[in-house]
Length: 232
Ligand SMILES: Nc1ncnc2c1ncn2[C@@H]1O[C@H](COP(=O)(O)OP(=O)(O)OP(=O)(O)O)[C@@H](O)[C@H]1O
Ligand SMILES: [Mg+2]
Image (cartoon, rainbow, N blue to C red):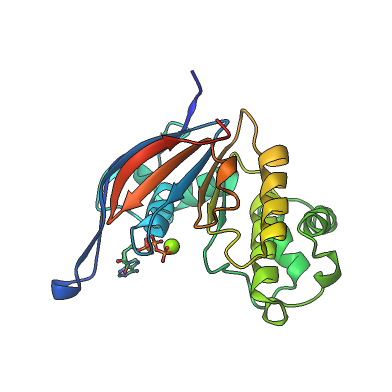
């Protein structure tokens, strides 16, 4: 039996007040296992990004709990949670969240610098990952000079450079052309996924769905179904 990487248990999340009050997550429970690539699909506004934020320790839920590698993450204090996320989790945001004042190369190197790599070692490792996503010739540019798809690839390189045990990707191919998206996701499936790692991906991209081990289908804040994927 595979080891549970993430256990989401009866998650509830509300946003806003009064008439704007939204029940964004309604009693959502699932397990994600090490060794699998779990996809989450569903219409816009169904709660996918909210769910990723809750399971990765970014957004505190209003109910339920999240165990990550057995640790009850929302019971940690802020410093413990930050350290835990740094050690375990890579995240690609739907809107990239690159550091505007750093170059492309420095953006990718940051997770290694935080893990106390020497600066020159961090940069040389970051350069390898920029090459993997096809951006070695953009290393010295700042994010504002990059196209949306290029920024998305920098965000992917930054999430995988430290080889995290748990990799969480929100629409990682939305701004990429079909071939580039598939090439990068195939690399992640082949080179990053292992028995010791778990990858969770939100996507609308039908061209990469065949890589899924399992597919969670969300609708209106609820988990509607869990299907076995083609790559199981
Ligand atoms: N910070 C916020 N404040 C208020 N409401 C929010 C906030 N974040 C999300 N919501 C609401 O919660 C619901 C779920 O949003 P979420 O971003 O999780 O959807 P999604 O499935 O990721 O959609 P998309 O496919 O468009 O990215 C939506 O109704 C949204 O308006
Ligand atoms: Mg979203």
